[in-house]
Amino acid sequence: MTVSVLTIIIAVLALAAGLFLLRAVPGVRALFRWRGERIVTCPETKQPAAVNVAAGEAALGVFFNEPTLRLKECSRWPERAGCGQDCLEQIEGNAQNCLVWNMVSKWYEGKSCVFCHKPIPPLHHVDHAPALLSSDFRTMEWKNVPPHKLPEIFSTCQPVCWSCHIAESFRRDHPELVTDRAPEPRRSM
Ligand SMILES: [Zn+2]
Picture 1 (spheres, protein in one colour):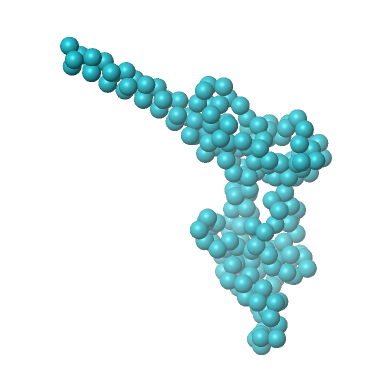
Picture 2: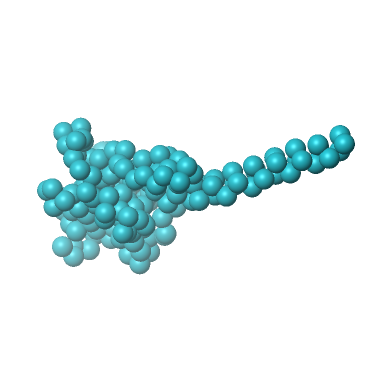
């Protein structure tokens, strides 16, 4: 009798764990799908805006079978915090392509450094970030550009590898310590 009660308890616990996993797996998938900063075209201004989806809430929504998708942050907030969040349509239809990381990766893909002409390696979270040469011939890391400015920056800047960016920054900040000539960037603009 004791054994059969134990068996029932184990069966109930296994069933509960199974049901939990059944809900948890799509929830975790939703968390990974919706996290990360994204660039959208603001339906109000028709200008780029950087937004973050409330990914944790979206994951819980999937877990409790009440899907919900809303923004957690927008570069136009707090001024426009009460907006209708109509840009969510763009995100739902293009979840991966509008991720800042994916947009930046795609922009650098196949490009070479404008100074040393070496190919820019694929973007990695742990590697040094590649940089950009602006139209006033100053280098900067893409990570230091406000995300909603990236589409504009990418149309006017040229790619620079991290090493050349460091060398150029040093030349700019300590011209008295540099005697050699920097390689000339290709002026393709
Ligand atoms: Zn370089």
